[in-house]
Length: 398
Image 1 (cartoon, rainbow, N blue to C red):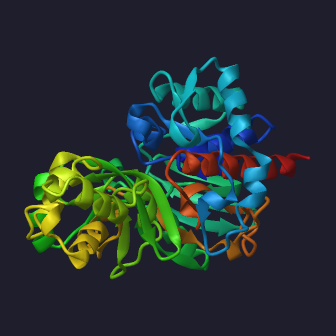
Image 2 (image 1 turned 180 degrees about the horizontal axis):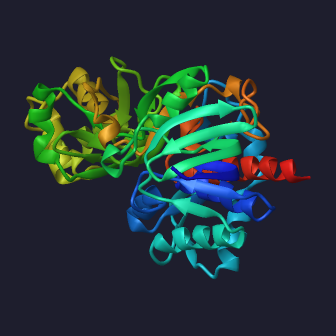
């Protein structure tokens, strides 16, 4: 087997790994990026319906979940959404803003991947794809990686291989395996930004609503999000549900306001006086999609508003403004956009992403216990943590 030496080896050719490699390479480090996939940046390629929701204008520490909510602050301050926008401008990549500060490419996400590869090329960064790592060990000078493409040594090793979300793309828990090998603590990984499943009994009632979308306000404990919700054949999805899933624990209930801008009880009481012959379904269809209005109205035994007493009006209003449901579970890592949890941030330097107890070892991106909200925040963490690490690596040449 051949043996080649590098200053830095990065495991993972995703968003964080490519960004880190580009920064370190352009500042004099001899960098090798390894990945078992056939192509780099697969999550970038499929993100945002193929147009890559690459950052969010409003990205800040409040948009992230971690056992240490302060950990992300340094990296995010060191590389902002505007910094990434400036990089796009250098490469003449057009973009547009959708709702809530979410930024997307005008063209395909492949433009972002090509940009990152071009930045890596400026630093003479090497990549080795379809490479399977058999062993990682420490040496007196750094690290030795035994692979099916040869053996490699380096003074620095960066783990940027993400989490197990979307395993059909080759995602795995390999980063956690390495963390355990080096004695690092983990925050138990769970699926995040993921649709909910619901019990068979309720599902049979809601199945006719599959495909119906409605703007909602969803609560789980003290956390809430106001965005769209989608009924599916398996349960509930859409931005509001994906967002709240990151705060949900099995067995917990969520409360959904299906008409957050409307006080349904007040409108019912008024309509009972002004339109007493109106049916509950007819009334609700003013504020909700017709299929949803009919499904909720079917829970009411009255045919006219005039026949409904105060308790009946309140029950109908509550079904709309405060629908309480306990999901039976989530769709898991199969469809989760990201993984919550990961390498405990207590193990890392927030400025460099370096492991405190193992000189030369770094963890960046999704593999770390920093999880962003939906809407470009997780990519911004990938860019920011990758840059923070890349800058720390370049200092080793000084």
